[in-house]
Length: 229
Image 1 (cartoon, helix red, strand yellow):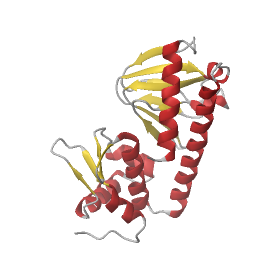
Image 2 (cartoon, helix red, strand yellow):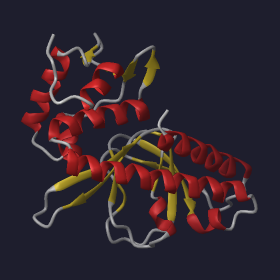
Image 3 (cartoon, one colour):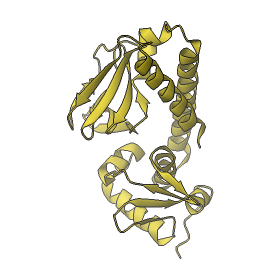
Image 4 (cartoon, helix red, strand yellow):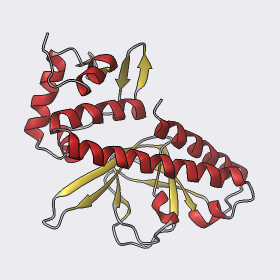
């Protein structure tokens, strides 16, 4: 498991415990319909969010109005932790399907009597920083095809279920969403996915779920080109 995934799971578990035990008295469970905004860029919002069910994407916009997806979050994932530093949001959070969240004021976390909750938050944010540094390095050093391969491995570790050397991902991501995260066009994403399939790096199950062959895709990240077979 990637360090970021491990740190997030520990923090999510601590948040769930704090909410269930009443340690964070102001925690609230909220239900949000599909395609609704949890918060908007520039909005004052001092909360951290834990997803119980559903899916949320965080996004921003370029100066010319083009949408850019920063991250996608699913059950037991945490988002909105930047409220530790800034009360005004620098991104927008939008549900991708009907979603249930636990909303916890960050001040309650920082002042919680149990120091392990604060420690879990610090470890989570440190791991998030490392993840963002890796994303920046990939953007600078990798072409879009390699960035897609790296993204698929990340999404697999975050959302998938391990089966020997493969990861089964039941969540569905559109080619448009992958394009926004990679920084390329939808047509290029389709072309790259076809190449990965021909090379045996991934395939679709009968239920149309994505199955990632980790060794093949990881080897591709270290190679100059993909060898079809």
